[in-house]
Image (cartoon, rainbow, N blue to C red):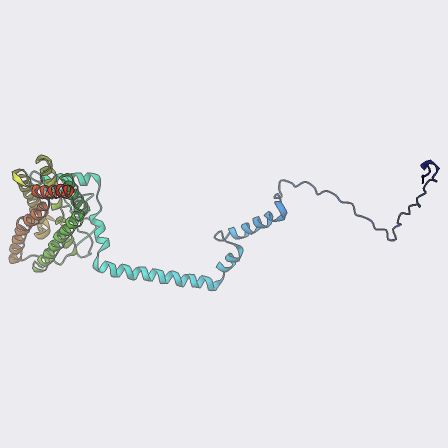
Length: 350
């Protein structure tokens, strides 16, 4: 069956299109662009949030730089009263701690002994090691203090080279511990427990000497706090002589310690220099002379003066010789280094 040609087909007709007609007519408002910002107005940030932040910062920045909510809290009368009560409690606690701490350690008085300068330290070290030609030994009284006021009777070390200090004794104490351990290590006699052993012996010497000084001040009727602190300061100058002894003896003996005639010769010189320095310096502490116009201390009876003179001699020569010999003998002798070296070689061969 054959189909007819397409040309014989009739043309197709589509239905007409009908557009919807609006029933309610509404007018659309015309949109206008905003005017450009002027220089006097702040620029707006994204999403309109930055001006609010700036306004809040201006509101809170006037009171302690805080958030407005916290600024309102600070303006509250109850909060201010709480802050005042807390401040008063803290001040009362600090005052209580200072009073109880100063009862055992006079911090205000110790500041006087650490008021030093570089020139004072150098001059004082020269006087301690070479005291033979130094003059005068008298101390300069403080024009703004007296014995009844309880303050320092003399000028601080920065202004008077004859005034005792605690800076040199403390530094010499630490240097002695480190130097002794270093010299032992250079000789090959270092042991891990040597540092603790040296520090323990040095602390023992200081504690024993402080106990003897406290007993001496009680027997000699020395009740002035300034005189007691002067004795404590002078007791630490022996570490300068001990450091000089172990250093020079170690260099001159080729690292063999303080044994032999070289070490004993240097020890004899430093001991005599320290004893002469203490004898001259402590004379104005234990035996004050009121006729020179200085600060008036307690009157000393003749018998008490003789006892103080004997104490001055015994402390400057006998006590200092024992302590300086003890500290200098802690330097390890050559035999110890040989034993340590032989034990190391034996352990390696085994």
